[in-house]
Amino acid sequence: MIASIPSPSADSIEIGPLDLRAYGVLIAIGVIVAVQITARRWAKGGQDPEVIHQLSLWAVVGGVVGARLYHVITDIDRFVGRWGDIPKIWQGGLGIWGAIGGGACAVLILARRRGYDIPGLLDAAAPALPVAQAIGRFGNYFNQELFGRPTDVPWGIEIDPRHRPVEHLTEPVFHPTFLYEALWNLGVAGAVIWLVPRVLPRLRRGASFAVYVFLYTAGRFWIELLRSDAANTIGGVRVNVWVSALVGTAALVVVIRCLQASDNETPPVLN
Image 1 (cartoon, rainbow, N blue to C red):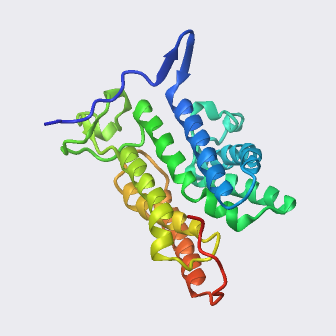
Image 2: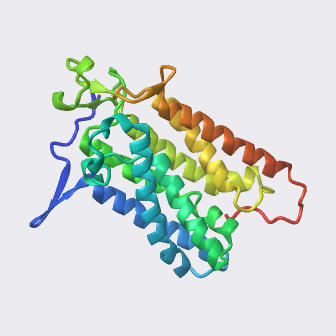
Image 3: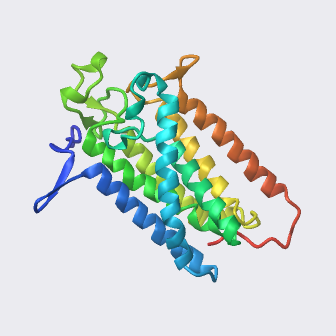
């Protein structure tokens, strides 16, 4: 029986003379996979897949900017007196909420200016984003970060002493919350692709994106409560827990309103 999962000995991948950070490589792979999934679903709707490749650059730029801004805003104390460190994303510090929001805003602004089918874009991207998030989360495995509380479950992750929280220096095994989130995200993608069209066949076009947001935040809520790393809090509760609750509630409201819509001619979500 597996007693625990060992962590990798290095956070980089060597390819010949190149020494690539595993986290960056996995994020890049996630972006590529997401673009391909979105383009394929967009093409199934009778649209030109080249549009997705054109929009992807804006999505990446907007996502990086948004992710960094979210991190800076929610951890502003770390940057007081060190404002020059804000652009240094290679030192770490990107927030998934900002990435989703920034990337989505950049794409929607450009798509509206060019007259693209925005509901179709949202439906096409809805399952692609959680797949990209799942792939990127394995970068946390290489960095030995974003793990949970100490545990004795057989799938616990071994963390080197230098990466453990001070209060848990003598505890070698922790909940692999990054793995939980990765698996949850894959489940969200599957639900959007297969479950939503069957359970909610009359859901308005574009609303599957709200379903993705709701399902993701539902998982992020309980996973965040397992985390043991230092984080800013409001009322003793982690900021990301509050964000999950607020964003998830807003997404649920959108889904309910779409279900209550009386437009029977609205076609089902992209399958």
